[in-house]
Length: 395
Image (cartoon, rainbow, N blue to C red; front, side):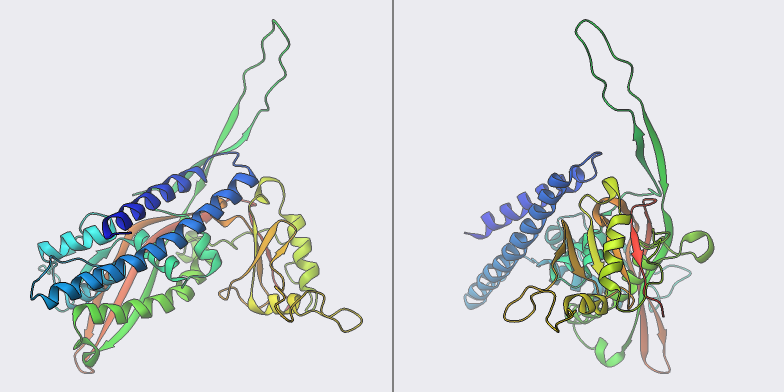
C-alpha cells in the first residue's frame, strides 16, 4: 500500500474512532454493544499503530532516496517527531516557523499550536510557553502502551469550559397499548455530574549539558520522561484524587466508591473480596465493567493453592492465569496501591475533560546550570455516583 493510501486509511480510522467515542456516551447502551465497541476500538488502535509504522518506514525510505539524489523535501513529521519538536521548542523558548507549524499541524491532524512569546513580565529564559494538544498527546501515550489499563480506558473529552456533565438519571418505562386506546406520557429526569477541577503536572530538571542536544532530541528525552512520570502522576490523581473543594484535586475514580464489607478485608481473602465486590456493582453499572487489581492482589488470586497444594487456576505450561471472572475482564494496574482493586465501567462512568492543553514552562537556576521544566494540564473529572466499587486490604 502506498503512502497516500496509508494516510487515507489512518484518517478513516480516526473518523471511526470519533464516531465510536460518541456512541459509547449514548444512554441505555447495552453490554453487548459496549463490548463490541471496545473490541472495535482496540482493533482500530492496533491497525493505526501498524499503519503509523508503515508510514514512518515509507517516509524514511523516501527521505533516503531524496538525499541520495541531493534534493530537499518539504518538512514532514511523524506524531512522535512532532511532539518531540513541540517539547524541544517550548524548552528553548523558541517560536515555530510557518513551515514547522504546517508540518506539525498535518502530523497531529490539528491546527498549528500557539506559541506564547516573552512579554514585559516574563524574560526570554522563563517563558517557553507552548501548548501541546493534550488529547492527542494522550492518544500517543495510549498507542505506546505507557499508561495503566484504568487510564487507557478513560475517554478524555476536550470541551472548553465543560465542568458540569448532564445525564439522564431515571425514566418511566414504555407502556402496553391496546387497540384503539392511547398511553400516558413518558417522563425522564435529568441530573448533573459536577466535575472537580485540578492541575496535573510533571516537573523535570534538565542540565545545560542535556540542553546541548537539538530540539527534537531534547524533546524526545523530555517525552520519554513524561511517558514514565505520567503513569504515576496522573494515575495518582485520576484514581485517588480527593476532590476540589478541600484539596484542590480532581475527583478520582475511587472517590466515594462503594466498599461495604471490603473496605478493609483480611489478607488472603482477595478472591472472596473481589467476588463480593462484583455483587456490589449492580444494574447498568456492571455492564461493560472491568476488575482492575494491584499486582499483589493479582498474584494472590492467580497463584492461590487449593487444600491439596495444587494451583486453583492454570498458570503453568502456557496457562492464562486469571483473565476474567464471569463476564468481567481482569486487568493488572500497577498504579493501584498494594491490596487495592476497583470494579466498574471506566469508559462510560468516569468523566474527564481537558480544560487546558499541555503547557510547558521553565524556570532556571543559573548557579547550578539546571533548568526546571513544568508540563501542566488543567483537568475536570469525577465518577458517576455509585458507579464504582473499591476494595482495600487491611494494613
